Image 1 (cartoon, rainbow, N blue to C red):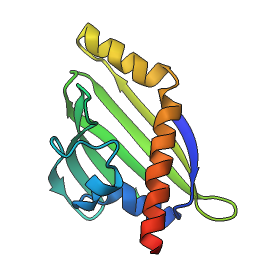
Image 2: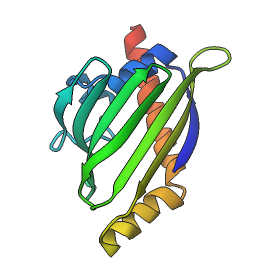
Image 3: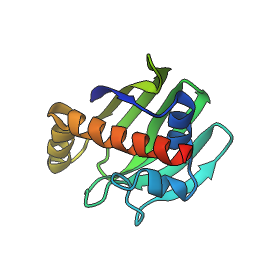
Image 4: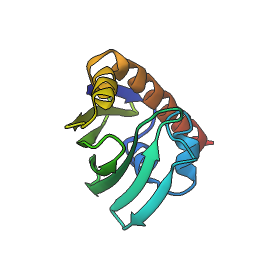
Length: 149
């Protein structure tokens, strides 16, 4: 899956929103992060390992996030519910006129069960990228508005 989006959030705000593994993460990503499965397993200055899923989704992942380059947040799935592997990244750049422009890439592959392969196909090969981009933009714009207040 690949999508680009522009948000009112500054590059610094986007980086904080993507790498804040405190309880605020549940607020920032309330539409896409299930508090029942969310768990931070390890964390350092520029990395974290967390278990996450979307509400009502049969899929969950344990991902290792890395933001040692502040312009790119990367993740690698180290464990998941579908028996495959995956990785992704968000490249953050200043947008002309303020805010940020994000280039998001995410891939999952090698799902072991047919049901999971179909689910991953729907996520990665249909217009879901537009839906996810809208949800991310909304979350980041809301984050920028609350950070400015």
